[in-house]
Structures are given as structure tokens and as C-alpha cells.
Length: 158
Image (cartoon, rainbow, N blue to C red; front, side):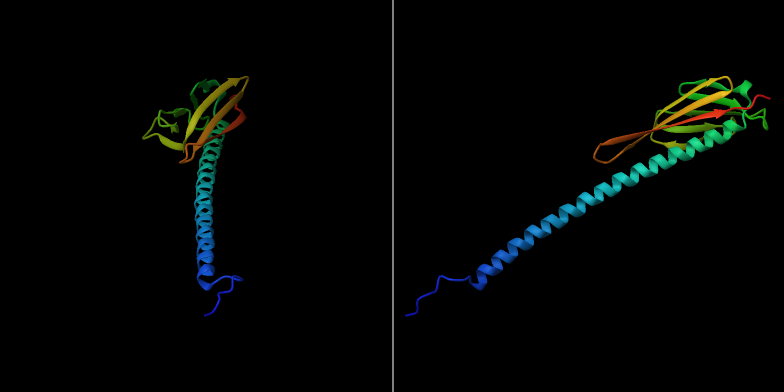
């Protein structure tokens, strides 16, 4: 009769330990993949929201640079003015209940410039118009991040 040695591990024991280590490693890899995907999605949403808000602010600024000071009317949340080159056209910027910045020109359908806009304010004095645009990006997890864009634009006085 042979006596079994108590030193060392059997192949079966080694296979069981290797399988457990593999399962733990796979669980960690899946968790890391899911977390990085959520982070990527949240960051991409913020970048898209804020880039859209920046483009909308550039549009507002470009239109205001061609406006006549006498025609600028500021209110919250609306801005109206007429261009010097097109005195008959009334341009307006405002937000709606769907959190969109809308540009209207009195002709045709209003244009949506940006989404996820939670605030639009305008103040005008002495030929200077201060415009503030607040964009909010909300991730699928419900975490919201806001960015405020502010410009001061000198308006012509023809």
C-alpha cells in the first residue's frame, strides 16, 4: 500500500484555483469595460452639448454685430433686433419649453440652433449687449453638468 504525500497540489486543485482566478479577472474586465463606456458616453454628450451651445452663441454674436442699436430689445428669455443691411427683417432669439434655443427671422419656420439650453438672458445698455447662454448636459445616469457662455457685443448705432 502506498502512502499519499501531503506536500504539493494535485492537478485538479490547480485547475480549480486557475478557474476561480479567471472568473475574478473576467468580472473585473467586464466592470472596467462598462464603466469606461459610461464615462465615454457622458463625456461625449457634454462635448456635443457644449459645442452646439458655442456655435449658437457665435451665431447670435454674428447677427448682433450687424444689428442697429435702435432696434435691439432685450428681455428674459428673448432678444429681438433688426439688421442694418436688412431693416425689414426682425430677428429674434428665444428658448422654448423643450430647452432649445430658437432663431426666428419672421419668415418661414424658426431654426433650432442648440438643444439642452436651460437659460438665455440678455441685457443691453449704451450700445453694448450682454448675452448669457446656459447649457446643461445630462447623462443617462441622471448626472447633470452645466456650462455658462457669456458674450458682450458692441452694436452699431447708425
